[in-house]
Amino acid sequence: MKTLVMATNNAHKLAEIREMLGGEYEILGLADVGCNEDIPETAPTIEGNAEMKARYVLEHYGLDCFSDDTGLEIDALGGEPGVHSARYGGVAHDSERNIDKVLRLMAEVPAGRRTARFRTAIVLLQSGRLHRFEGRVEGRILTERHGTGGFGYDSIFQPVEGDGRTFAQMAGNEKNAISHRGRAVAALVQFIKQQA
Ligand code: ITT
Image (cartoon, rainbow, N blue to C red; front, side):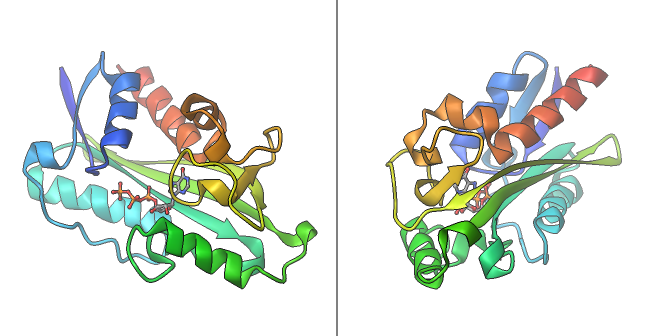
């Protein structure tokens, strides 16, 4: 079986991709290849960060690899938090602080101007070639949290394609069907399956 590394230690992301590609590929996470370093993510765009992580794995471990990076782009904040989404509130991966900061900055923004989108970039380095994939979902930023599911900014993001619920009020499979990452991963999987 062919092997592909996903440049993450996020167990949820690994389980999701194994479910979609498990029959055809052995999917390894960073820990599985002995990578315990914090791979630098210092590019100015999510595309750049995804590429940085994938190149790091190829250079250090010599294995085909793909990597994803996601940003929440809020129009009233000039596209922020964007590439800074994980640490917008000042502490890496502290979602509550991240959300507090967004709600504070948007306190005066009227309903009609609260548009936003999640965007996921995936970079695949396979057999020496680079391939890019993207997924996005449009929505609105609410004025307070709704729901307890999901993670990150889910409780304040209401997708336009839904029925008014936030991502945090949806079941995982409902969210994945329309989400940024779900769409980007679907594009990656379709590409990989075509080659198999
Ligand atoms: P890695 O370990 O794989 O790097 P991460 O959590 O650091 O995962 P992501 O690129 O997936 O990095 O996401 C960056 C941030 O964007 C993340 O910390 C969340 O705050 C937010 N985010 C990403 N996907 C999201 C989603 O589906 N719903 C809500 N927030 C999300």
